[in-house]
Image 1 (cartoon, helix red, strand yellow):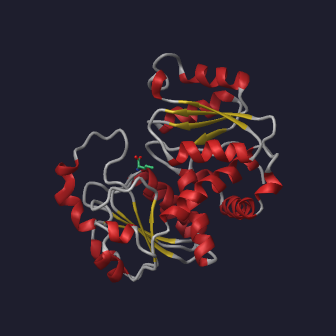
Image 2: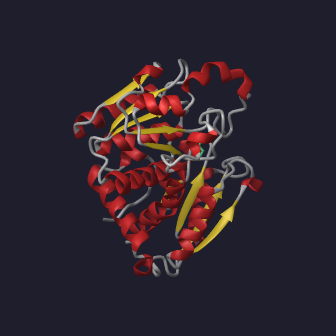
Image 3: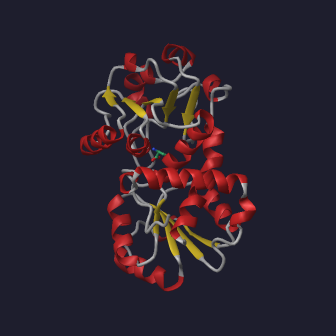
Length: 303
Ligand code: NVA
């Protein structure tokens, strides 16, 4: 299976996603087999926002595939300010073989993909975090055998991470429930898109503001209540969000055996320390899988 770009969850179909997950597991188990997959290739990583896991996992992952990576941080300001996005993309394509970008606006990624003529990978945007979702569904495949029919509840802020979890899960046939406080629901156009994808795969998608809907769930997932670039102070939203905190009572009520977090975790806010550190937490498996899932994408982009 080969890919052109990795920009948004809904651009992949079920067979492609399953093949990417299967390949990611194979790369994790047999890294030596792929040690020259990116030989002679250079990947530019453009980051408009901070990063720990994404930056390091791409950097080390590319090295493990025999490729070379180059990081450009925030020193150049927002993309499109100093020169047009399309010119940045065309310049990078003069030297590099692929672009990994973390951006404020998805539109910037789409524009880069349109003009670069080389593969572009979404390393997080305002709308999506597909590399995270791929690593997450890889972890769930490892733990549950398959994600088809799996009940997953995302609880917290409707954001890029929940959008990707909902879209990719709906394609793969997972029953996703997204529970947020009122006013923090996921983007309605993306919910409608996910709803259609769920119908096609025979899964269910539930979007709710009622925390009591967190029942009969095998997996609970949460993320920060305030995403990067959002200047809201936590004190201003605490009262609204506290009933949605992942704690031991909520885990017991949901009946879940696994809890997930893409990190960074804000302990005692969206998740308690005891749940984050518990045996049920697979947050570090998710973090490890970021590298293997991204390497699977890179291998497929260069096939
Ligand atoms: N929703 C978070 C994810 C961080 C990995 C953010 O955009 O900041």
